[in-house]
Length: 171
Image 1 (tube, rainbow, N blue to C red):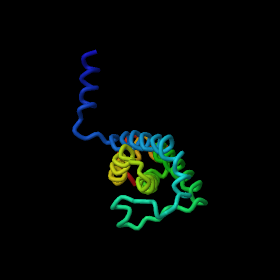
Image 2: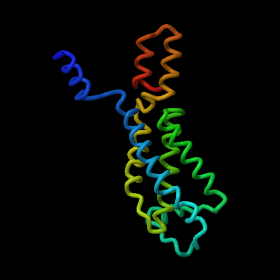
Image 3: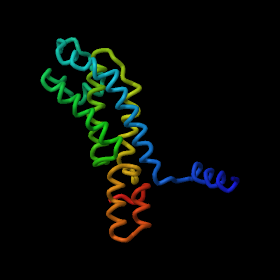
Image 4: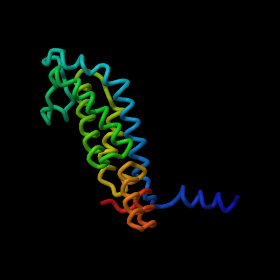
């Protein structure tokens, strides 16, 4: 029992865990996805139909001159955010989907902020996800790493398969 606890302690307090970016990807994308789905998305169609002159976007959105979406684009944006959140959590096209999800969800949050809703609880995790998306091992514990591990196993390299599945070098 003591050896098992020592092993768990070495794993938990390890200075560098290769699967940590994958775990953070899952946690941050899940958190931001559920916040967007349950708090921002229901209000989002209203933002597209409100008079544009009443919008007061935050400084960052004004500097980027981000447009308020037309009503016809709202459904497409909502679907894209939901699909990208799901693919990011599952680790499908991991790096691309994490970057696209973070940027699109930040855009949706900035639009919501222009109408007085503060999406602080969603923005910070999305910025962290955007940074982590560039980390090696972002695809750990995802479908991409599982497929790469399967290919490595078929090629006869079991150690490479384990490395890919749990966050080794990325391709």
